[in-house]
Length: 310
Image (cartoon, rainbow, N blue to C red; front, side, top):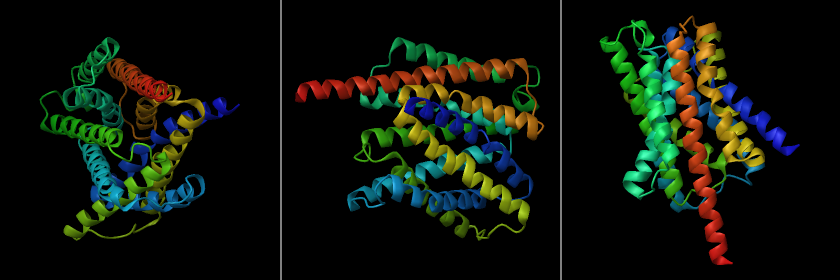
């Protein structure tokens, strides 16, 4: 029963994350700046996650020596989100959200280049599939987002998504190799969004853009951005991993880019073509293979250490 509950939570997390473009694009179209939006999002998420972390994670207390690492993670988190939402202004949000799932490729590359983690053959094939998926997003005559392959806007938007994926990959690697690797997932995420909120607030302050939502439309979409793709998605995936296992959670994560593209097509009027569908399928499959491979490798290492200690 717990495993089924974990699977259900994984699906809820994927669907909740898929609402990211919906609320984000609505705010951008209403004239809200990326920095303001991210400040609202992360500050609100920290407020929502604080009681959840207190209840399920035994409180928010953490050693002082962890603070610099957590602050760095928050900055990486904020930088990744800022690049992604800036890309929403240049290319369709659904496509941008799908391309973000190149991050497992970058995680594998970083771990191989800097930590001598030899990638498996399946990982190498999956990396090639992910790159092929991006190529399919450019496959039709109009190119990505209908702007055309040579459009400066399309190229800049795609570059911003790649930067976003890189920042998120560095975030994941930093968690893996630092002393906070064994910290409870929700508590870790709380501190990440807390410091991300501080980083976004500082950026807003430097540009004199500090304000609250002006009307019900901005408030509703800001609350949606906080509640669904941030707090709910994070909490659900944390407990999906706990009850169903990391590998199953990774498999369910394949629904995230598909959900984002579907919601963008239905509610935001973005186009959906055969080549885009193939591209998303390749990226999703690659994400599952790479993430599952990394999780199985981590499990094998933990078992090896257990037997050595025994």
